[in-house]
Image (cartoon, rainbow, N blue to C red; front, side, top):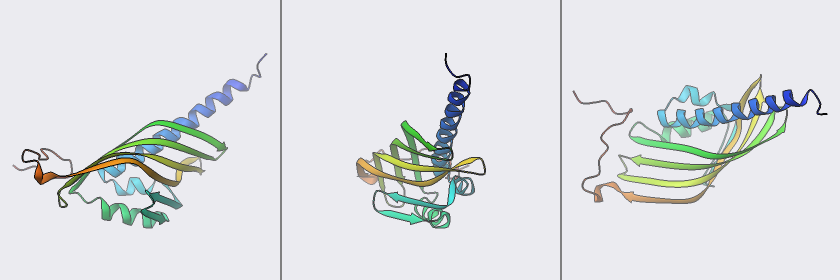
Length: 165
């Protein structure tokens, strides 16, 4: 007969996995909506990043400076992750691989990027709450085009752009 503690252990494991998923989703939502204070709350203070081998950062302040600089209101983004493979590596540690799809519109740069990557993350539980200890991705592919070359292409709505009266 199965140990009576087993269902409780399975339920706790599922609870932890769901909390990590919600953390990753919040991280991406905060990037896209530019909710910088909420985004900072997703990270451990000593977080590290490696975005495509191009941007390696250390510490929450460095990550937040990078995010603000590279994501001004006239850069519109959509980040979605799918297919999480999350492993609890201890009571307060975990790692995961996620498939990312992103779409970036740079109005000042006159370009759009669409691509996909694999995120490799590490998590730590601090004071009962999961935080991102390391995040980064490796591109599978990206494509980029010049927006002004497509005459009919325009952004018709953005939460970051004031509407005309």
